[in-house]
Image 1 (cartoon, rainbow, N blue to C red):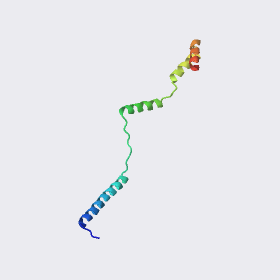
Image 2: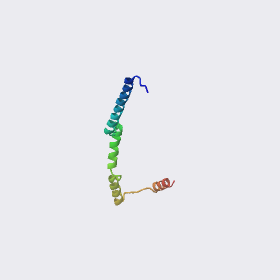
Image 3: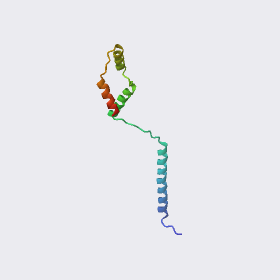
Image 4: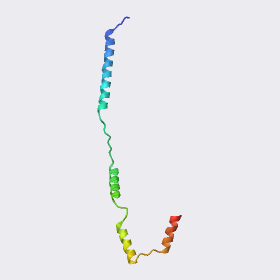
Length: 94
């Protein structure tokens, strides 16, 4: 077998080795870098989150209203008209 231009063949192999080494180093570096997820909220989302946390912290029972109705019932001043009761019953039924 006759090999012409031996120097050019050696250059091709050596340049491929350099490129392969670069890719291997880049892959190793990529594996070694630990990326962390990041989350960035808009001002509107931050405001919404604050309001939601405040609402979650509050009780669903409004104690001031409960106390008001307890006082009215115990004093005998709490009266509901029959028509309002009937209307509420019909609305809940249909």
